[in-house]
Length: 256
Image (cartoon, rainbow, N blue to C red; front, side, top):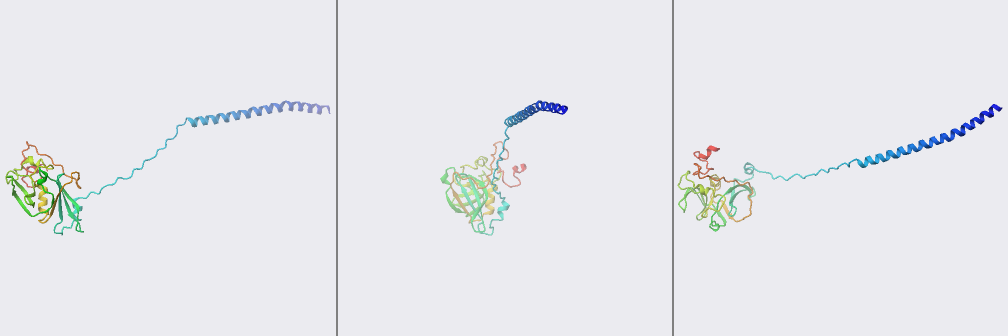
């Protein structure tokens, strides 16, 4: 009996000592975990703050550019009523020095811009009359009032004609090159001047009776690309020839 009582006493003493120790240990461990968790949270927050914000790229969407369909002469040919008595109509802008040839569509309207040519009108604007005229005569060569000659002369009103650059003689190698260099400016005595290839096309494709309108529009842009005319040098031995003349003797053809 004494031994049991003694044992119980020792157990009680041991429990009294261990319980506070264990309790204190649990408290210490719990505090440590909380501190660790807090530190981890703070670290994570700091890391999140330190991380650079991800840039958001907004892709700009550009609308496709409108493209203007380009037609070739061959494409336009299918739209023109060549069975009409007068399949073409010519308009000359006296201010901007270009002529546009319009083709007749199958509804009988001159709605198709077919060709555009550089030209020259009168030095004194009123000497090239405004209005709508018609081709009344065609001359392969014509003697002009100023004593020069022109190729492919097409009469539209009195002495007013569509024709080539003037020549000193009735010879293709005597063109007045200084007058050629004036194409695209006011230069004539009243007629409308063209390169040989252009007036030759009118001569061959526009019959007598074809209408020609001369009008003024100082700000008009041609509906088709307009050719740039290269000037002829005084020193060029070929200067007596129109560079666009299709004659096989034309020395400019050697460059082609």
